[in-house]
Image (cartoon, rainbow, N blue to C red):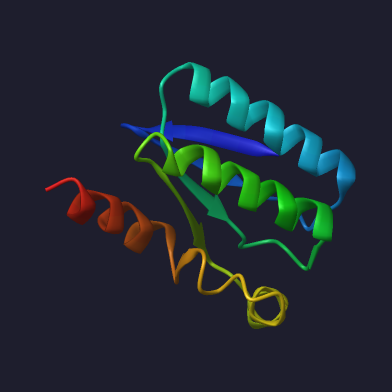
Length: 113
């Protein structure tokens, strides 16, 4: 799993399949960046074909952590298949889901003005 810092935003690129091992890696990255003071995260779903319920739970937990710090976690490039999973689990109302990384960055820019 790759991630990069873009100003005050962390962009996490997910792999093709997001199982338990990837969920642990996500939490490690998330915890490390929270400790460094980051509170804006974009999760890039461009490559994702499968996402486990374990990861969905991790995203919820992360979003709640960020909420208490006035931060946010935005989902970008979500495929129709993954969107359907988010819809079935009623997570589409909980997460901001945007079509691209660029629009996600703009979203954060608008929120801080």
